[in-house]
Length: 219
Image (cartoon, rainbow, N blue to C red; front, top):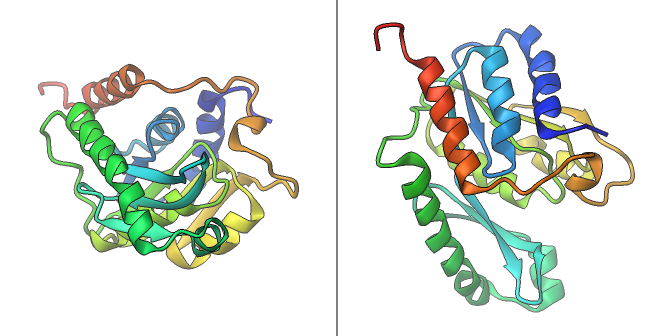
């Protein structure tokens, strides 16, 4: 049990620090992953940016992911075939469900990045951070999108995850760092005492604060 995302990020940063990661870039899965990732970036003295990703929920149960999209235009799509079969959804159905998520992804990109280019990932060690992983659908889409950018190495780092998700994601990251993997996993928020919704304003504030600290003294 973590008291907050801030505490989880500090503990995750402490775990990663001895690894002496070469040329790190920390990417957060917004919105909940950003407060965690910010503390990791501070610990590693690394650039911080976002990996925009959106879950595709089933029509009558939006929290249940039938897939996820990632990348600037949402072109990277991952389908959870077990959920799709259970819900009777084919590829065309899922593409239709993905469209409003692509609209939201583009909205967030414009709002959060404000026209700037994302941090370059080629030949860097990319550390992808979220506040926790339940099914792994969104993380998988993000990892596939990151791999296309040509990084030297990908590390998936989370405070808590289900054992099923860790197993499913092992082949998509070069290394997984997870502080807690409880045998009985219900929801990410159940492992935090304080787990408020992270709003757009907080995302913008965290990014702006980190960018300001990263500027050179005469910048």
